[in-house]
Image 1 (tube, protein in one colour):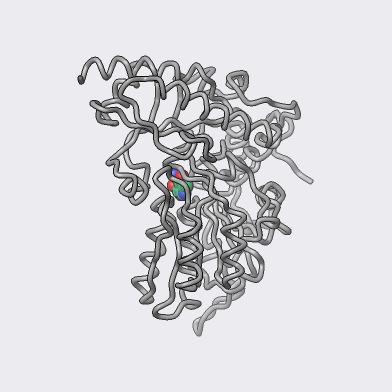
Image 2: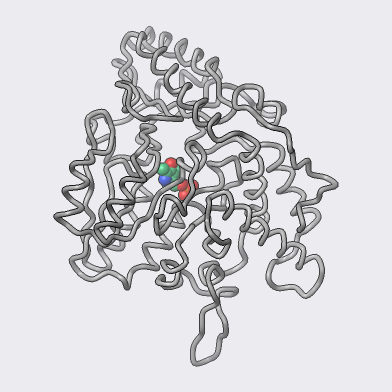
Length: 420
Ligand code: PMP
């Protein structure tokens, strides 16, 4: 089995523990701007292992995959295939044939929404939730428009938890053909009871898609145990590169999908009369894939595998708890999300200020060397339901620590002084 340039890339077998100590492995902190980076839900910083792998592939193994008869191309192809195997293992997929490389979670959901189009009939229902990122809403709304379907939203509680009684009621009264639900909401950090959601949806005869864009990094997954039909994630939110993501599908579900895009690599033959499709997963990977990014995503998975999953989970839950405790005592701060009252929340802490707009706050925080997100976080229906136009969002990764949000408290005090 090949691995990327053993000579040049340290694959790292040391056991790692989350916290500020791992910043030494991230050039962003050691050579780049560093700072209190509190926007990991938008994109994570990249460890040297990922950056070195990307460079190494482009320098030493750069040849188009699945095409060349020469050795360089064969090696690039083997590295690409090995990345697919690594990711399959990381997700708990039964085979690498269940793993399709996409540009990201958004493209993966679009692939399913287009590919499953012919499985729906006019009047069919797609059930999503009010916790979804726009990328798990808009592709379904577009599909609904094309096919005369209805997109229905399961409600959330005022704390920002999925309202399971509403979900169950809609499941049994509307008999949705598809249930699409996030594992972890990027706007509030809500952990959904995804095992129960999938079990109930399957029991009601629906197909299931789980948005794991946040969940895969901050909670982890075993897709086979979860039993969902589809699971999606993005490389850049799991310490890997941008431009690469994953669609996992159960083999029998992938076989039901129409190809999303046509072109090279996804065909078995092309003639003037028509074309035939390649087997899965190639059927869904038209054109030259982002193979350096896919191989570097394999390195990101190697990096993540150096941590204990339980340690990542408790580190990020603990950070959320401490952030809530600290900000609770600050005048003018309103916290949003289930963790405020002891509910399940991780990796994200959202809040608003009485007299400062989130965007103004983020600008002031920047002067304290705090990179923090303000806005609707691509979750307008969630915020609308909570009655807030925008929030400030801190989000954490393996390198985050409590000192990061001490700086947030200073910025809260300064901004309130300026605006009140
Ligand atoms: N779902 C969730 C929960 C997300 O947080 C994001 C990214 N913010 C996405 C989907 C979309 O991911 P991407 O933009 O990488 O396709």
